[in-house]
Image (cartoon, rainbow, N blue to C red; front, side, top):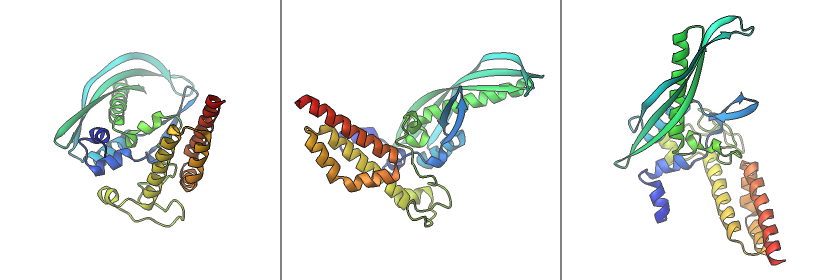
Length: 262
């Protein structure tokens, strides 16, 4: 591990680093429609479960630093807008503290929540809880892909393309055979075949991307693609968008090199 990599990894142990660097499980991704767009997200309970799994049940804390109402008004509810109710909005700031390697890592997140209910108190409760959960997720997100960081990339290159990782009845991604059921600690020490395949594809992608980035001639780019044909096949099988991105990069770099030598 290089000095820079070691500094980035500190103070987490190797098992934790492996979990934090792993792609986000496709099973954990939900979607909703908002303002005509489809938004991807992870649920609050997933973020908490992942924090417990990676940092340990006593290895992290969340503290609500601020939670305040920013909007409150009466509204009409129901499909026909014929029932009176309340619509309120809250913002919250939550501080996440993770203890690892004798150190405390502190991150913060800000979140928003809205609530609508016939009962004013229930509307406030709903909005306050939602804002705190949103803020917690944003704070945890800074630790890596398992907490939703991968969803901030529109291509979702770090989201596992195969659903099923983490379920009790997982199956092999290629032959469909049942995979053994492991605890999180056992899985970290003995990754499933699915995880090995996904991580191998990721390693190939990173290596090929780096090689393309330092290529100095169009012929060298062709040779990189040819020499890494098996790795590219694995990437295409596991995550087609990542394969398409790599091939587009190769074409773009070749064009730039041709232009520089033309």
